[in-house]
Amino acid sequence: MKLTDNVLRSFRVAKVFRENTDKINCFDFSPNGETLISSSDDDSIVLYDCQEGKPKRTLYSKKYGVDLIRYTHAANTVVYSSNKIDDTIRYLSLHDNKYIRYFHGHSKRVVALCMSPVDDTFMSSSLDKTIRLWDLRSPNCQGLMHLQGRPTCSFDPEGLIFAAGVNSEIIKLYDLRSFDKGPFATFKMQYERTCEWTGLKFSNDGKLMLVSTNGGMVRLIDAFKGAVLQTFGGYNNNKGISLEASFTPDSQFVMIDLYVSSVTDITSSWWHHSVWLTVWDRV
Image (cartoon, rainbow, N blue to C red; front, top):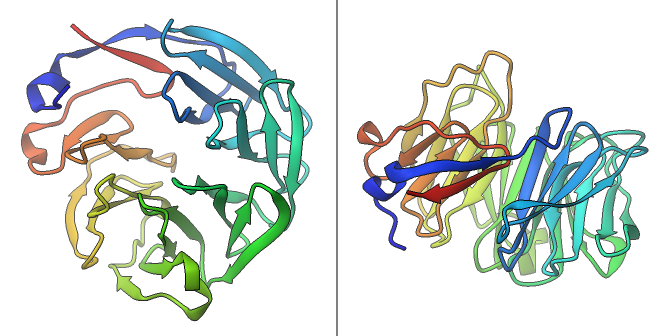
């Protein structure tokens, strides 16, 4: 299906799931797109069948809490950060609800967690002002970066480069194979005085990046030059909730919390939609 303004405007909410008693803090699709998994502040992990459009299974992480849940490259395992007791990242088998491995190292809350698109490497950033590189096959940290402010991070679509957003004003690009030599590109933005950067994502074509915040805007960045191409703003976000922004697969549209925006023409492309656990269908 080719996505256009008219196609996206024709989408309607087909089904809404209300399985949780508290805020859903993250969700992620499996690599094959057949299932969706969510994590919630009520300590639950809910697995959804996307083909049948119904909840499939609910697991709990009562002791440690659960946040930033991410599928690995297997549809039956996930990694997630903890929001109780400690800041350990946990590697969970969904098949038998058992932990495969623990990743210790962060001393404050993990605020970004992302899997490499090509292998078992994953990356985390924390309020302890570090970014850590991990391998699912080992509990030991594979790489450590100390930064000067709150970091966020993301892999590029080919898994060769990663970006680090630092202190809500700087984006640094690193070659994964030689990150210890420092960034090969650094882009300095206007300092965000009213909010913090909370997310960083590449488009599927690798040409663009989205910088999400806990304020009233999301910025669209040229991934090669670091220039701000567009600012999606006007959100009433007085509570400081982290806006969630994503590209559509064709890299032509941006999905932002309660709205969909065109990368090329924001003025004609705002329309309301539900985000958390809502299945979309075309009518």
